[in-house]
Amino acid sequence: MKREENLLFKELCKFKKETFDEDLLRFATPHVLGFLFFNRMQGIAYDRIRRQGLLGKVNREFRNSLKSAFDQNVIKNHSFAKCVKMVAAILNELDCKAAMLKGAFLCNHYPEGYRTSNDIDLLVRPEDVTTVGNALLEAGFKQGNVRNGEFVPASRKEIIESKMMRGETVPYIKLVDLPNMKYLEVDINFSLDYKNGETDVLENILEKADVINENGILLPTLSKEDFFIHLCAHLYKEATTLPWVEMHRDMTLYKYCDIYMLLSEMEEKDIDTVFARAKELNMEKVCAYTIIEASDLFDIDSSNAKLISESVLADDRDFILTVVSPRDKKLLKYQTANATERFFMEERVADLKEV
Image 1: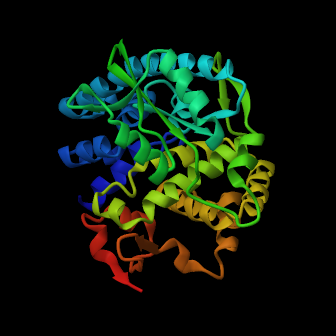
Image 2: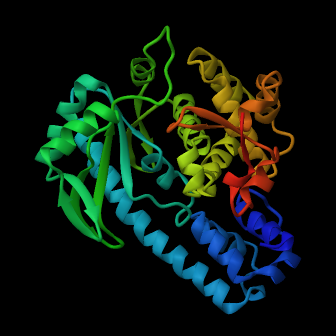
């Protein structure tokens, strides 16, 4: 896309910003529209224009496409909230700790129509996987996958291999037949992508997990700081793993938007608490990485979180630019430091050089 199209795209995504550069709407092209959908930011973009009273300034096809997507998001939000409430009720009846992650909390935390999710991620202790899995089976879930809109049951071999090799179960699927949501998928995770040699991190964060009231839903989830750290870790893994870069799924903006939203709700004391906890979990650099990248993408220049993050990475600036290739255990490095410039590259993989 051209420079002006890039600027409009970013302006449409910064939903916490009170002002809007109206002149940029002249560049509301199909390229910008497609990029909004690719990055799952179409609902936010529509409401950003609407709240500014600028819908009449945008060409009809651009405006109507965003409105249709926003309306569909609202319908799906209602369906997903019902699913979250159902799964939360199942978990709250169990005599074990289980935390609902990512979209289960975030979709209901954003303004309506902004973010959608297709599944519910759970984090449990390895010894509790069977208990949680059986509870889902009793509630009508079946293990398998949805392919081409239809449920395909998992084989016994797939179920065993997933638990042994991936640290998560084969998805639990239920036909819910709700508007814009035929099936619900629940993924049970019982390991983390990050470890601390001295501490059982999984046990540590689940011990601090609790039930919160999120818009009327009693939601079992991680503590506020652990939720943020886990989100950072998940984003970091996908952004710095070569296959994700090759699939163009490494910098999908909705993931950075989650960080942008949560940061906007934090006071300085909250940031201090997050970094103190991140240090305890040996996750300071991962949090710093995510905050710096999100700050660049959403033009957050003066936040305390960014200043602390830059301090954490002062002696290791290459941490932000390093990508891992799991296939051959090689390290690669981006030649372009600026996150926004990398984000708008058609082929980021071409910017990588082997270390």
